Image 1 (cartoon, rainbow, N blue to C red):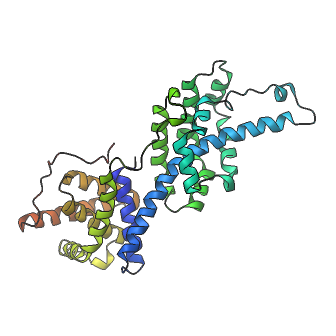
Image 2: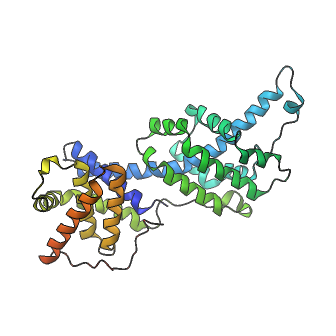
Image 3: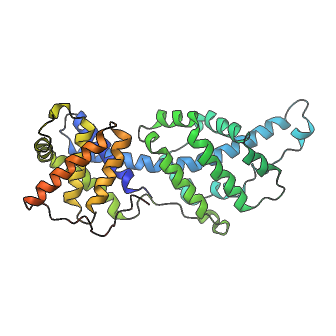
Length: 319
């Protein structure tokens, strides 16, 4: 499932696009957010398909070697263990995967060099070589080599990231999260489930979809008020010189604080500080923490905010 942190990032990107586009079409921003989330979820399936494509490439290499004019003994008697990977065969027939791939028209057909590059790199690793010389072919070992490939080869492969960047602006910055999601899926797969094994849903619950949309709408609808609060809490700063992303992060955090009483303040603070570390300047986390703290204290003193930092956590950001 897509985590709340990823949803917060997607909301931030949509808020940024809204203001960059002139700040006049909220409905368009909502539509863009939904598309961003849907495309991010596509990446989960795209990664599962990539594992299949790598095995298919290995099989084609074996077929090509056998068709040589003068094949060697190795060419005529290839090691088919990786090509016959039991987990991949189960995944290949998975109804949920094939249904989503067909509905969303996802394919590696225009990026055949990616599975090639990944297999070539994988085949040079000690883990792959040990896997191939083991005469036993267990379902667990077959899952393990695919997990190893995703976790250690795919996430470091430049061709993979170039392909993602070419296809969707929504993919590159969350690729590692969805690799983790694919790894959790593989670990849960059971051979006995056959083609009906369930894949992960987009959201943990319907509340997550509503969370993202409500957070976007509130961030924009109360934007002027939030910016005024930021100005009042940064007396020694020229508002025009504050990094735009810092303003948007504080704006979004304030919307979350006011709109979602079930999320503890400490969770909201921590989440936007962590996002700032990856998306804004080096000094942004300290700045955002300080400004948010001032604004929250001001809202509490005025009676506009009654919220405890110790509300029970119902947020899944850290899972």
